[in-house]
Image 1 (cartoon, one colour):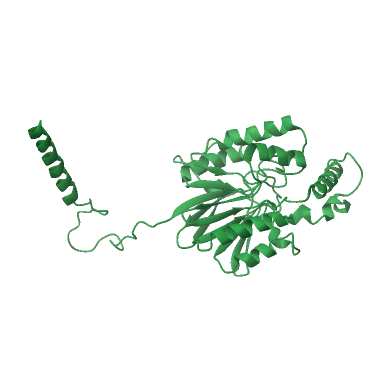
Image 2: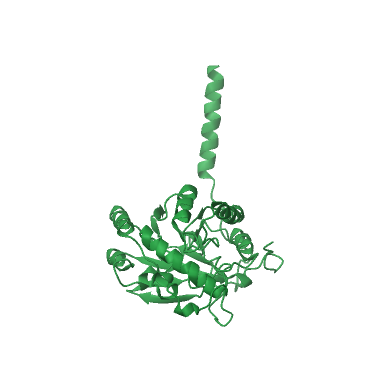
Length: 326
């Protein structure tokens, strides 16, 4: 038995030594030994310490059938580490729990076909009234949250963060405006109470949410980058319910802000940082708006983010087709 044990250890030692001395295969192999070469350089960038994530934008406000299904297939081909959303994932706008379940089941069944994690974030279609807030809580947990991945901080904000009474006022005014749009009652949408509510365009957030993120930022002072995602552009609201107080806390760090809601793409520099409003990933579009297009966003997080917006019509499969969304 002792002889066998010693022999086994000797074999393992020999194998281990052989493995240690085995050279790594070359990264670049060719058979041209002299003269010019048909490549510009044989010095390649080393493997980078980075990761890539994707973002989808609005599905709703009039979802167009099949678009999101196609986006799921395209995202699987692109294979990011995970996918984020900026809200308006269902049509919503109802207090019927059975209808809400039907709509969320539809969205989540399609999203389950992704080969990577997906992070939900609510928009006005997802969090219109107290019933929908409660439904979200029971299904997805908190309406605003954060996470850290590879030393990058993500703030997933709720731009529909109103006191309950104000939420009900907005919801009821919205219901009247929709009846005007549908021709059920007389009037002009532009004259409606809802049209003139600031929350319709730029949302709002509570002191509790601000305090939550203030603590998060204290906990993670030295992350490589911070991404701030929301549905409505809270940064356009100039009072204490807008993003201003949080921007003050973000001032000394590298960060990027991304939101949806307008169904039209735009980007600007604000306070020295990039602020992007995404287009759509299946939501309604204004045919006269050249910046209203379906796309997915890829972010490669190297030393700083490299952001690429890919129009879905240009993401083709091996056969040169846009994958079927059915």
